[in-house]
Image (cartoon, rainbow, N blue to C red; front, side, top):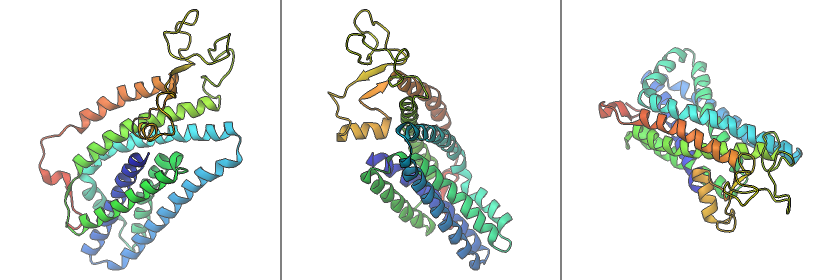
Length: 308
């Protein structure tokens, strides 16, 4: 989960850093330095709201029953899937015009300065909430939390270098590659959500019990696979386990954590998890690749410099 958490922190943090840099550069260009403090106030409040939301999601569910915790986890994962999917497609377009659109919004909001406060609060807060939704299920793992913080800190440094004009990044390429990773990772988040809702017994599956869950009447074990021995051929589908590789890949091992954090693979997955994962990738991945393919445009359209 370290790599996944780091990249999420880096991408979302860089988006927020670019927003802050563009807003500050704009107000200074307009000789309104007194507004910079209001921008930072909006940023600080946005960070507090996102952190509070993460704490609420992480610790607020502990007083619930196991089924209640899994239900919240499942629905929050589905919400994260919707938000992340929308975000990666939006950034393919917005990454090319972010500076112009933000400056246009800033021009309308400048006034006495409090409009810039709200613009910073909403813009940075959106990135913070997206980050919270993508990371909250893994934040109980100290290594994942450290990775996310390292990614955010790295994005702050990179954002500052971009603001100072020391670094220029082709953001259409950056958002395309990180977006591709997020699409694949989001398929895994969808699978986690399905698993949680199955454990909460909201969706049918291996935890539902008879007569929904396919079991071996001799041992009581949930059936696994598809091509099983008679008389169970095909019986595990769709509410049993698709496969059980726990003896081959330890879920707690480094390999198990890496596969779960990058492609959403766990050694024990139900058929509904696999079907949801496959359908999401079959629909979203080709759409994303078509839209992310390089277009005939000048390099300046794809580069952002906050100080420009």
